[in-house]
Length: 209
Image 1 (cartoon, rainbow, N blue to C red):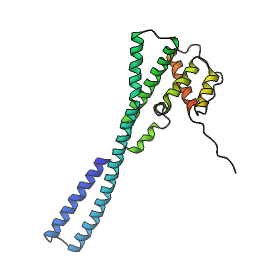
Image 2: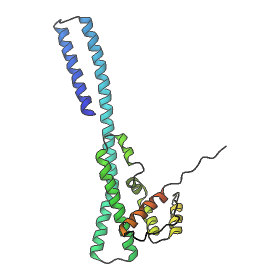
Image 3: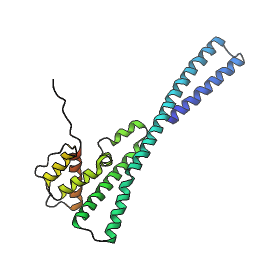
Image 4: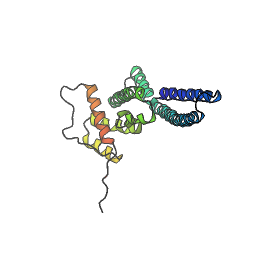
């Protein structure tokens, strides 16, 4: 951690100052003291290199996280718009369906970001977002919503065709449908999970020679 490296830096500096004071006051073998000063300075440089590297990575991580938050701000804004729409006027069944799916997608993405963000301490930790719904939603959220909408109303072929037309690899939709006792929120979430799988880019196998 940065604090440990800063502590080590201060200790090395104090040791060098103490050894230089010994030299100045002729306390001890001058050759031995010079050797210790040289060795300690090398250790100090190593500590400073590590400290500078750590600070640089943390600064890069901060920039990356700021950009991620900026890119996801539209999710919260969209949720506020949905709430206002429901309060002001009755909307069509199709629009209600889209709004509900948007709301669930937004809440899921924000929940993942809220869970992952506090655990990010360096640029390397950005891998915590790998394969997360939040990152998928940032990259192609609109497409996920439209695919989920088709799944919601049972248009399996349309969902598959749409996913593949957008570069998605599709997914197994055999026996797809809403369970008898499945409540609407869980049904929407399942549609979102399935749509996310379907919209992921197709993994192409290399051509054999």
